[in-house]
Image (cartoon, rainbow, N blue to C red):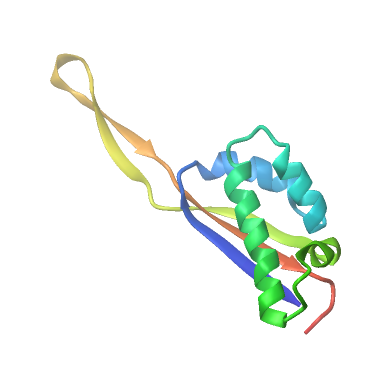
Length: 119
C-alpha cells in the first residue's frame, strides 16, 4: 500500500532540497522524522511537513486506525524527489543604467511512502 504527498511552490531551489531528500530516502518514517527534526537545513521544515502529510494520507486512505506513531514505524519512504517549479523573475539595478535578472527558484517536493504490502 502506497500513499503520496506533494508540497508545491516551495521557495527554495530544488538543488538545495535534494540534498536533504537524499538523507531520508529509504528510511522508515519515524527515523526520517527524527533526522529532519534535528537537521540544520532550511529545507527540512517543508520536507517534514510533506512526510507527515504522506503518513496521514496513508492512514486516511486505507483506514489503518488513529495511532499515527504505530503506523509510522512500519512505513518507509520509498520515493522522495524535488522537481523544479515556477521561477519568479526580478530585476536589480546595475551600473550605467543597466539591469540584471534575478531568478528566485521554487520546487515541488513529492514523497511516496509504503508499508511493504502490495495492494
